[in-house]
Length: 347
Image (tube, rainbow, N blue to C red):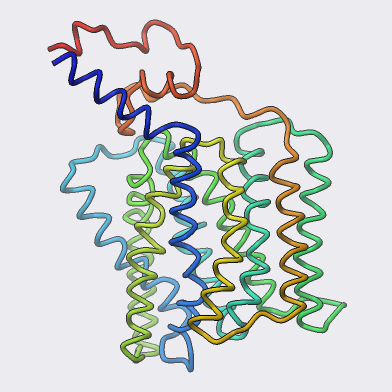
């Protein structure tokens, strides 16, 4: 019995190393890299409304989430965790999908990918603020430069130096929403578990998303081809649900400002997918602008102060991570009350 417990703990430590955090994060980014091109396919020619694609996929994902939570008999979140889940839901369940869906009705997936390249820097900033780090002034300087680069790219593409195209404003708002949702979700995943976090967020927002979806269908009945429905299915099952299993797992292992760096590969993947699926070959301005935004975002992610303080491990093991593996993985020392005696484990 004790040998089995030791084997389980060792296995948990392997799954929670810093390298595994980057691996989980990369798996999530690969899943997300198809989101913009497939959203573009779903809303093409008005077959499906932007609100139906952005919100309806959350309804489908909520069904899977509710089933997973019920079958595994997960404990419900407590107290302030519900408020934090509402923040996650507002950012990644409602905010990002709806804003990008509307933007993609008037702009290309390739263009959107470059603006979304600001997301790693925005996530790093949100993680710093939420994690109460004290970064050097240079961090905020590079973050501001990253934002300026993304805005400048949008202006150059729209040809309006006096203002941004409405689609770019939607995309920038989507970046802000996702960054907040990612940072809060990453912290919650350390308490509730990675897939549990997105599942509870989907279930919490289900009454709103279901009501909005019904209204959207009544206003504009979705038609679409088999390809468009397949794109919608991917957005619902993978982009809105399964992808977050890996992404929040990676952020929970962290540190978030490091794992968020992997998002820098997402615009490159998205542009490649857009070229293959949509026939949107990248122009010179997209390549140059994308390189500039990614370079600035990379500098922002790296240019931070000491890592955030690692929170104490969960007291009740609900996150699916043993306290001993958590402390061993993060090389922290905790009071004796957080350790579990061998005689208890041997029972």
